[in-house]
Length: 232
Image (cartoon, rainbow, N blue to C red; front, side, top):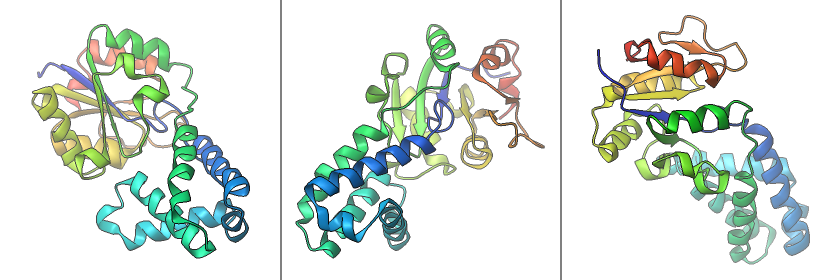
């Protein structure tokens, strides 16, 4: 039975709820345009800016994994269509990025992550563009890898293999924990990693091929008794 030598965590909806964070960040961008680029705010409400970002991602499928680039391109397009200086897009993006990283951890995160970090190497693997330092998690994590760095988004195995190379470990020595059965579980197993599904709501773990937990407090026991290592 392979020993787990590192644990990788998904971030959004695993360590914090992401929907309210993104909603708040998008509202902050719209409020910023009201003050600094009123024509943009008149042309696009929050939902309009969101639709524009999705359209840009659809138009650039080869780069759609780079969420920061898609956001920047869509903000530049909004400025162009509203007839204002496209350079306003960069400070608008910074408003989004700062707000996007003001996250509220789930109540079990600090306790469990800090304890695990005393005995295991922790890394983050996220399709999103959260910044470990800005979210306050950096002291417990060796590093974070985004889809931007890996060149592909989960469930593509490249993100997991990129982490394994940086850790100088075999994929089977890495346990991945995340909330998404496809992106996290299927992606990790395809890459040769062990996986645990974190199903906080209780609606994603039906017929799961890997152990399912409802909160992080159940994770250390799975690691200690070896259950997690049998999920690759």
